[in-house]
Amino acid sequence: MSTVVSDFTGTGLPPVGGGRHRRTVLDIVVPVYNEERDLESSVRRLHAHLQGSFPYPFRITVADNASTDDTPRIAARLAAELPDVANVRLEQKGRGRALKTVWSSSDAAVLAYCDVDLSTDLNAVLPLVAPLISGHSDLAIGTRLGRGSRVVRGAKREFISRCYNLILRGALAAGFSDAQCGFKAIRGDVAQRLLPLVEDTGWFFDTELLVLAERAGLRIHEVPVDWVDDPNSTVDIVATATADLKGVVRVGRALATGALPIREMRTQLGREPLEAGVPGVPTGMTSQLVRFAAIGVASTLANLLLYLLFRTFMGSLAANVVALLLTTIANTAANRRLTFGVRGRDGAARHQFQGLIVFGIGLGLTTGALALLGVVVANPGTVLELAVIVVANLVATVVRFVLFRSWVFRGRARPATPTTADTTTELAA
Image (cartoon, rainbow, N blue to C red):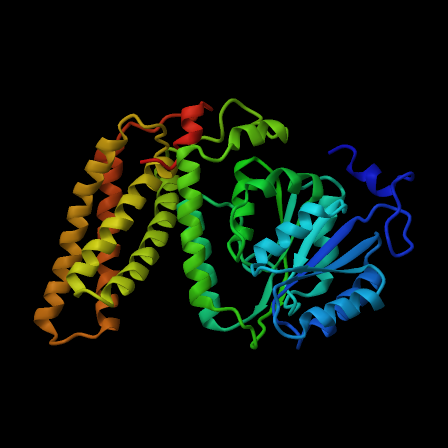
C-alpha cells in the first residue's frame, strides 16, 4: 500500500491511450443492457464532469452485456468520438459479469462503476475514489442510508432497500450500510485478489464482493451521496430480491463450511487482526439486546416473506409453522455466534435442540394468535393475518431473548480465538 501514491504521480509508467503519459488512475465502468435511450447523454455528461473536475488520468468503459437494441452501436460511436472512452461488448447478460470482465483486465489503479441513469450526484466521484488513491482504504461505496445522504425515491424501493440491508446485517453480520447503491470503487490490486472468489454474475455481485472484503479485514470507506431514483428503471424488483436472497444463503453457507479462504486472504492482504483473535462479542445485556434486536428484525422480515410465499399454496397455520421453523433455525445460529459469542461445533446440536424448544413456545404464541383470530373474525384477510403475526412475533421475540440468555447460552460466551475451526464454522449451527 505504501507504493500506491508513487504509482499515480511518478514517471516512467507505460503510456496509455488518449495522449496521456501516466498510468490511468480511474477506470469507471458503466454496465448497460438495452440502454439506447440514456446511454449517450449519460456518458457525455460523465465524461464532461471528469474532464472538468477530476485531476487524474481516467477512462470510462461502457460494458455492454448482450444488449439487443441500438446500445452497441451507440457505445462504439462514443468510444470513437470521445477521448478516454472505451467500449467492451459481452455476449452474455449480467451486471456482475460485465464488471468482473472489465475490472479483471483493466490496468487502472482504481476501478469503479456507476449506473447508466447517473442517479448518484457526480460530485461524489472524487470523494469516493480519493481514499483509494491515497492508499487509506481498499474499497469505497456510496451510501444512501448514511448521515448526510439526500435521497429521493418511492416508499416501496426505500422499504425494500432497508429490509435487504437489515437481512445482510442479521444473516451475514455485514457492517456496511448500503450494499445496493450503484456507485462503488475498489483498488485494482485488491480487485485482483477478490474477483476470482466472487461467483455471482448478476445484481448480487456487489454484496458478495463487499462481504468478502469485510471478512478479509479490508477497509471499506462510505460516502454519503445525493441520489434521485430513476422512475423509468427497468430493474425487476421481485426477481432481483429473490436472486439476492439466494445469494445471501449461498455466501452464508460458504462462510459456514469454510469454502471461502478467508484466513488465507487476510494473510495475503496483510490484514491479520491487530490483536490475537477478532473483536470479541460483548457480554453485557445492552450490547446483546442490540445484536439480538437486529437479528430479530431480520428474522421477522424473513418470516413474513416466507409466510407470504407459502400462503399461496397452503393454509395460514401450515404456512406459519414452516416459515417460523426455517427462520428460527437461522435465528438460533445467528444469535449463537453474533449475540452470545459461541463458536465452533461443540454443543451446536444441543443449542439447536434447545432453540427448537424455544421455537415451540413461539409457535404456540403465533399459532394460538391465528387460531384466536379465526374464532373472533370470520374469513380474516391476509393483511389482518400479517398484523397478528407481527404482534405475536414481537411477544415471542422477548420470550426468546430471555430463554436464550438465561437457559440456552447461559455462561457460554467466551472471548474469540482465531482457530481454523472457528473461522470455518462461524455460521454453522
